Length: 130
Image 1 (cartoon, rainbow, N blue to C red):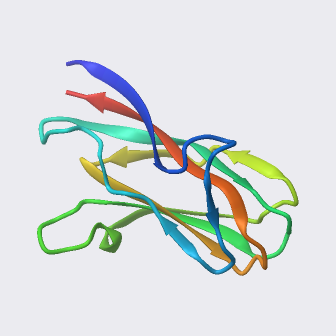
Image 2: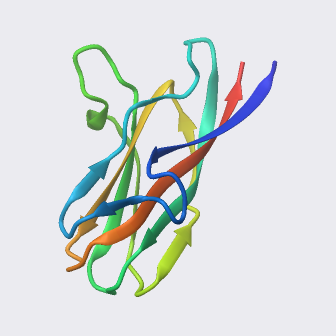
């Protein structure tokens, strides 16, 4: 058995260069092919949920989706959800670890905070076993 690690993002690029998520808007990242084939398995560590907010109301709600199947959207297959109250500051949050399938999507909703979340990045480290 071999083990490999790689890092990437569902959206955004770093703590200082992310996307802006407007109030009550949802940011859905591109579908990521984690393994590049169907002979591996592994897990994701969502290590990098970065964002900057100027308010403390509402919540920032995230979802990780997987198990794309022919004819169905990956968004129908939710595997992990998380929610954090924003702080009037920049935050870096370690979300946790989750088994991963080949195809995955990350999504975050700025839920009624009253302000845009800026520099939003949802990143991961994938550990592959084959």
